[in-house]
Image 1 (cartoon, rainbow, N blue to C red):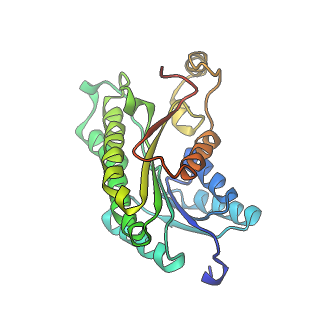
Image 2 (cartoon, rainbow, N blue to C red):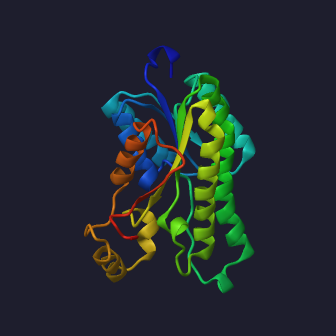
Length: 249
């Protein structure tokens, strides 16, 4: 990748190899952003997404594989972003994992893994990328939360806790970075058509769909379009934006 080809702004998306992250990446590329796409282990899938985006939309794409809860890997992301693109204009912290189960049957290892990926990873990415945004007095950070971080879900206490933490972190960081011209918001998706819902039976998914006032399960594109709306709303910061088809009232 040659710097002479770079003319657009740059967006960094974690958890970009599938589902919501892949959908967000395609929407941002279509809006003219160069991309830094990050995933934990699905390197082949990530490179295919990057190749498809580059061939169809002629945008530059850098892929990096590693764990965003690893401080050293986050430093590698920061160094690569500065070296290749010079800056990061939009950071989307989408990397996350989900686990359900009774709290009495949730192991400490499961709890720690959820906290490490969903909350610590978001913190490290914000801490790593924010200085580049502070330097140029502009930027947009968007954290992907969940409706269960807004309203806790039965048998998802650990997951809900981490996403509630993301929401609180988002609101606090928004106040901290606002004087530097950086906006920080979160999206709390409802039921979205991704692999994360593969544990549900067909009947369970049908039941969920019937409980959604708009009458359908959301798509990664729905989240991607909301990302663009936030980016293009210069007076919005510190908001937790629920995108759930009206599921939570």
